Amino acid sequence: MKVYLFSVAPVEEPFVKEWQDQHPDDEISYTHSPLTASNLELAKGFEAVSTQQAEALKDAELKALAAGGVKHLALRKVGSDNVDLAAARKYGIVVSNVPAYSPRAIAENGLTGAMYLLRKWGYYHRKMRRGDFTRPTELMSDEIFNQTVGIVGLGRIGAAAAEMYHALGARVIGYDPFYNASLEPFLDFVDFDTLIKESDIIQLHIPLTPENKGMFGTNEFAKMKDDAILVNQSRGELVDTEALIVALKYHEIGGAALDVLEGEEKIFGRKFEDVGSLPDEYTELINMPNVVMSPHSAYYTKMAVKNMFFQSMTDTQRTVSGQQAFFKVN
Ligand code: COI
Image (cartoon, rainbow, N blue to C red; front, top):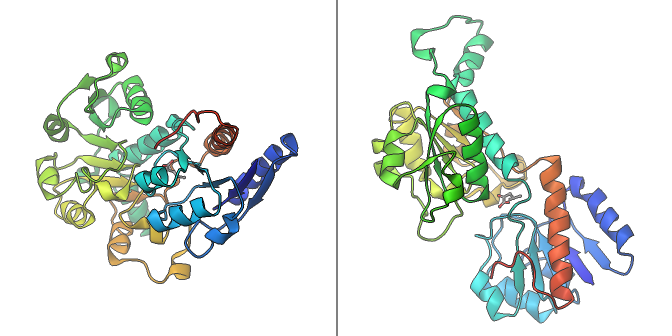
C-alpha cells in the first residue's frame, strides 16, 4: 500500500521503520507537520493518509485528498472531533481511529492531577520556593478514600478511571447516557446534576460533540462543591474557560487539572514563541496555584504511542486491501 503519514513525532519514527522493515512492499513517506491545506499535495497519489493532529480537517481538505486518490484517513488517536466525518464519507474516504491505545494512560494522568490538587502540592511548592515551610489551616487536605469521584463518560477510559478510584477506596459515581452493567462493581450510575453536586473530584472522559460544547459553565460551577476538583483530559471545548477562571478565582470550585484547553489547536505540540503570544486566559490559568496543567500529554506513554501507530496502520491496510477497518468512525 501507499501511505503518507503526517504529524509524525520523533518517538514514532522507530515504529515507521519497523513497519517498513516488516512490509517492504509498502510505500511510506512522512512529515513531522500536521496535514493542512498548504501541504496536502504531499499525499497526492497515495491511497491513504495518517495523522495525529488537533488541526481541523474540513470539507475542502477532504475533497482535495479524495481527488488525489486517498481512500483512507487513519487517525492515530481516539478523538475524531477535528474531522468533518460526513464530508469524508461524501468523498469516499474511510476514517479510522484507535479507541483503546491505552485507556489507563489517560485515566492515570487524570488521577495524578487530581491527587496533586487534593494534597495541595501546587500551594506548598509555591510557598516553599519563597522559603515558607509552614502548614496553614486552609491547606489541610483530604484523603482519597473519603472522597466522592464523579466520572463523566464511561467508555473505555472512563471505566479505567472508575476502576482506579474504586481501588483506592473512593466512592465512585458515574454519568453516561449509556448504561453499562459491567461497571456496577466499581460505581453507581447517577444523573448529571447529582454527579456535579455530590462529587469532590469530577473527571471528564467524553468525546466532544456539537451538543456538549461548554457543558461545564457558570451554572455547573455554581452547583459544584466549593472545594471540588475538575479534571479535564478530554477536550478543552467541554469547559467554558472564562467561567472556569471565575469559578477558580472566587472559590466556587477548588481546583482544576487540565490536559486540554479550549482553542489549543493553535499551540498543540508547539512552543508559544513559535505561534505568537499565549492567550491571556492560558497565562492566567497557568499561574494559579490551584491549577495544574499538562500539554495534552495524558496519552503520551510508551505503550500508547506504539499502539496508536501499529493499530492505525493495521486498519489502513485493511481498508486498502478491501476489508472493513476494525475502528471505522464514519
Ligand atoms: C486522542 O487520542 O484523541 C487524544 O486526545 C490524544 C491525541 C491528540 C494524540
